[in-house]
Image (tube, rainbow, N blue to C red; front, side, top):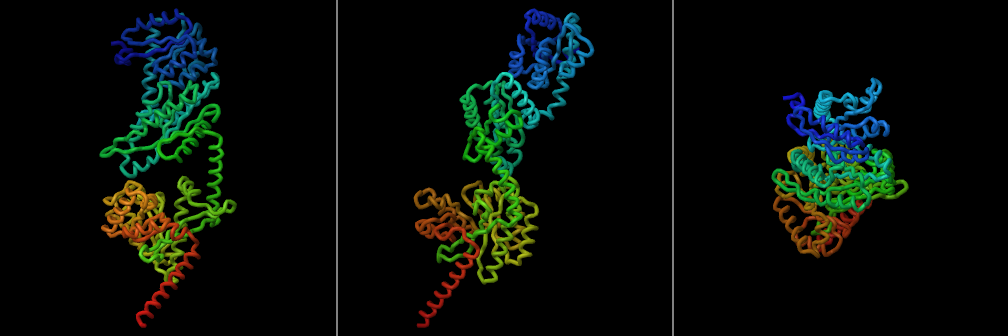
Length: 586
């Protein structure tokens, strides 16, 4: 067995010849046939343009080209060929050769060079064997540097290089380059609610589905985490892009099979065009990511084309982030309180602390205008501790006035994962000297279900401080009564989406009644959110709901107004008591 056979192990060697003379193709084909043990497939291209298209659509082991091609295009062909297929080895054939020319060719990316008049069966076999050994070594060494280990797709480093070369080609040919950034929505929930193994299954399945949608000439990459990217070249119409986008959305919307379950994942696609969205890879990626972020604001699988307005919006968000940090330092945030009312007598028995931002120029901002930004930047943790501290200060004042009401505050998912949570809460309770039995943390179903063992440990440790827990927006997430039964949760809050439709939709009414009954059977109180009219109050009272909260009773109000309401309530209760005593005495 020849050395060439040993290196190839009988595999087909795919060779591309770039030369404008048919006789050169016949000459090379003849000599290749003389190489002992070589199994090959020879593709011939007359022009550099056709060669680059062939390289983009095929995986060649070796590229053989005349030196005149490389010279006339100022080594662009060598550079682009190596970009499109880094593992392919390039052999240059030249009519003349000296040491300086040879050195410049090697520097430009060629593997070897041959002098046209001196080519023999032996010299060609030697050059081929050397090229194939280098290709094998390159594949072994570069795989981890350029490819994603989980999916086998190219990684961000190699993808960015390919995108840059695609832009260079488009600049010369005056064509467009289209970049798609595909992101799986809420992917972290899969890792948190199931396992990292389940997350890996979803990522690999998503990669396979994307691979089935793109053309062989397109570059598909995993940019990291739950994000993929696709470069499309040779696209002439926006409708062609839309066809692929809709195909991707259809594929990604199919259920994912993970160990023991089937789940659905939405995805968001951002689309940017060269040259309208940017003149280089960095700006094009930035534009596509902005468009992808905008697509995420829509429910379900969605896409968005980049436009200048998104760039303006991103700049506005950056400015907003700077203002947000200053607001924390300047104490511009306010804590308002929405009463929770006992449905049997209409008395305030608790309240939810709701943050607002007293912006110096824009006025009072609602949470929807800054909470998402706080989540993205991580400032939600610092802001959350500020809310807990303010709630404890308010609770202490109420307790000093003789009011025994609960104050509940939302605990964000990120804050619940903070390792210093118990330590910080204990410090706040000690500093404010508040009776923590009246402090309540509202948790989302995502936070509760993220890691059941860790959740139970954290909740148990906080419960020892006296803190109570309620489950917010129950019925909208993944949890069930079986999951929460063993957790120290004292109350459930029925999501307002069910409450608002309970009067008009029988299905929602059945759900509300079932939640109330099951919660009571587990010894939990039930609080209905979003109560806006008397009909809803009557229905909830009939269903034996414990507390209600919503605009029918009051919107979020200042602490002073809450204190006044409690004083009036106390005076009213005292008056009714006196009247009853008088009736009994009379």
